[in-house]
Image 1 (cartoon, one colour):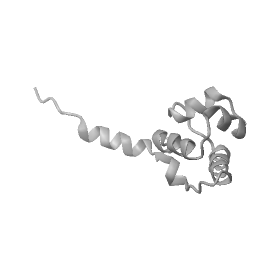
Image 2 (cartoon, one colour):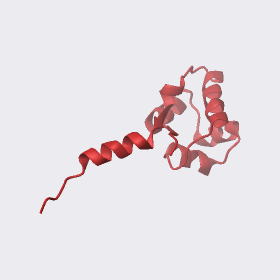
Image 3 (cartoon, one colour):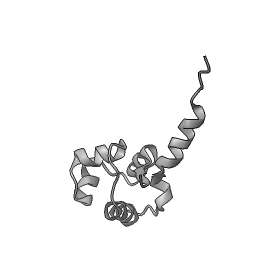
Length: 93
């Protein structure tokens, strides 16, 4: 499975607050529904490359220069599976 890019919820909400932008206004600027933006922020869905770029541009246009790593992270399922394997206990009974 390929890596998934998700929004850093706290950091994204903090960025909205810093530029005094409501989610309603951000969704309008980004050309998406308020519900979809909420789902992205809550990590229910992963924003595609074009939308991620739009988000960075939106903040930049409002005077907040952010990088990819400021508001996004890459969830690599293979790493998570390996970590889950390490935390499993073995029952030798």
